[in-house]
Amino acid sequence: MSSIPVIANTAGPGAARAARRRASQSFGSTQRRPRWVTYTILGIVLLISVFPLYFTLMLGSSTQTEISQSIVPQWFPDLSIFDRFGDIITSGAFNFPKALLNSIIISTVAAASTVLFSTMAGYAFAKLRFRGRRALLVFVIATTAVPTQLGVIPLYIVMAKVGWIDTIQAVLLPVLVSAFGVFWMTQYLENALPYELIEAARVDGASMFRTFWSIALPAARPAAAMLALFTFVQQWTNFFWPSIVLSQDNATLPVIVKLLQGNYHTDYSLVMAGVFLTTVPLLIVFAFTGRQLVAGIMQGAVKG
Image 1 (cartoon, rainbow, N blue to C red):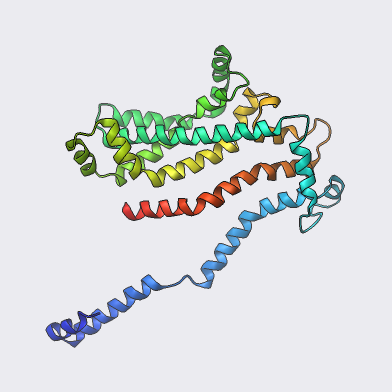
Image 2 (image 1 turned 180 degrees about the vertical axis):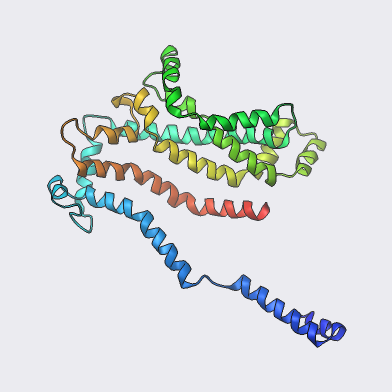
């Protein structure tokens, strides 16, 4: 605003008025607060997102008789759901603490390994020059079009040959890296990591791995955080392959929920309580990492 009098003295009052108008418009655009329409839309989206979890909690608080009599047995959950939590945890049909530990190990190790290997591959595809780079990247991306079910039989045969049936290694090995993670990190590093930083590290005498560890990995932190969260949630809710290769004595939480359904009779209140119980750790993860995750994404967006 201090330059407007200078503009008035040099270019005349008309130019000063135009400059003042542009300044006020830019200031208003940066300070403009969201209107009530925005908050209304966000509130509706929030209610739609939370409703399935609320409905699960409500059914878990009801009895089987109440569920059979009405699709909405009650509007507010009660403390009886903790009794069902206790029945699930202390059930003799499966080992719930071991299933919880297996899910934590598989999800955490898969998220960490996927971030590390995908970032390494993404750095190579994005910033290194070697023959066949684009063709190899296209081949990696094309593997996402192959259904997972097609590889179950040969994968099961391999696990049986090495003696890993009913072990968490059989679940971990196929998910140590993903084609989507490689594509995700390649696209991010292509724009977020300038060649000048890599060349400066090379001039300083850094090795290939040192350059990746000190330059590429910190630059990829926002995208790596998103990939880690997506991978953790995906493996936490993964049911198909663990249900094939693991037994009920060495299962994961999604397999435990399936075991709550009987062959001839299903207690839906117990099943819904199990579904909510397996969702609680994910809610805790989002509660503790959500703010840091959004901050990392915004930091990466500004730097990019």
